[in-house]
Length: 310
Image (cartoon, rainbow, N blue to C red):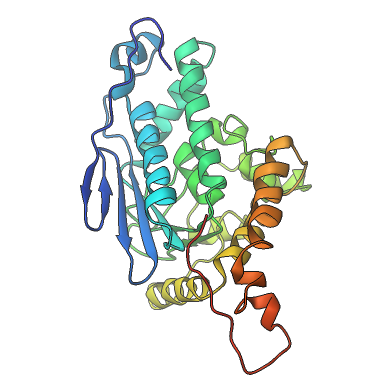
């Protein structure tokens, strides 16, 4: 993404024993629980609103910097934290600031730099789709799951939204949720979520303003909406359930659910072939001496899994 007057500044991660931290993104790792928390901070105001302002800000603009950092955090997770099985996706900050940045991007997408920014965000979200980890989006009152950042929740395997609270948790859509940031299948994440149900999709897109937990659940935008009594236990049990399963089986099953609808070259290679034939069926977790398929039906023995994920 280098053009006239635009240079990508190097990222400056702060590494520590429990993860990595950037300006806008933080990855915290709990290796004993095989759990990571990936947190993205919303912009804090003063973001570019015109192509000239984007050119002047360059890679310092949140729309570039935060998404480059998210990409780097996902790669760090893939290559340096192989035994992490579950990732909690969190956002913090001002949701309105995210929507303002999205509006500027949508308004000026005919400009070459703004178009490249949208393509960067698209690529990073596809990186998340194709990351072999279980993702749970955690939506709380201080979250900023709006517009482009709500795509993180749509990409997650499950989303938990706290019911109640003062102020209550809310989510919101922007014009970027209407196909600007498609999946590998070419569908938007909302289209994939409501596959074949155009009436439902249009009802969601035409809903005025943000969604609270009850409305989000009614429209099918989130998976679960526990109240504060059950909140901690619901999430803890979900984490323990997923980390107990075969990592390889989860890789294949989650890929199936992430890519419904039309097949493309990308989904065939990354969502099907790599997830199943090249990984699951040739790994000891399935066919090894202590693999699940080897021990299936024998009784008395439990499979032993290599906890590393792809």
